[in-house]
Length: 224
Image: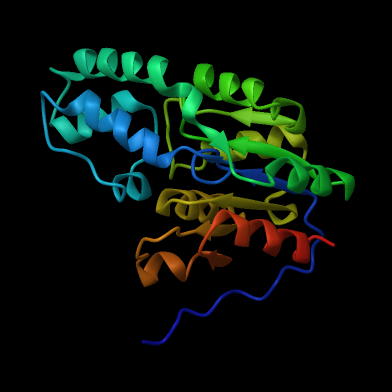
């Protein structure tokens, strides 16, 4: 099967790097899947990891989509909160994240986050793992009424750091990350983990890699 052709590298210096959080900087997706499964168990179908490739936004939006309405969303959110309080300590940054971010910052890059996770748990994760000081802007899933792949959040990140789309790269692990980046005019690195990604999505990614570590290496090579 012919692989999609990627756009030529930009001649503009990439001054800013924007990151998704879950599955990109922190190893949380297996735990998030367990949390969603626990939350939805009495009410609907068991979610799979592919869910996170296609849906963006806070849990209440995802739950409403999965459950076909709002009826059971409050109870599911309560179950989700209970699970997260008991297991939140199990989420860890990927190995080497601090050194990687230190290196990018040392090369003069401005770093930011655009995540679908809510602000409260995002800031708590960044605080617990000593990551908060790296980022000049943090935009979360409950900051706007819109959600990935709508580019409003990414546009706000760029506004906060004072950079044009061509001066930034975005790194994420979901189809909605790629689509949101494209809609904003920001080249996006897609981390696919072990899942199959549609060629239509791969064709829109600036680069597709298999793991967060490959993404870190790619950025260090490209952002000399």
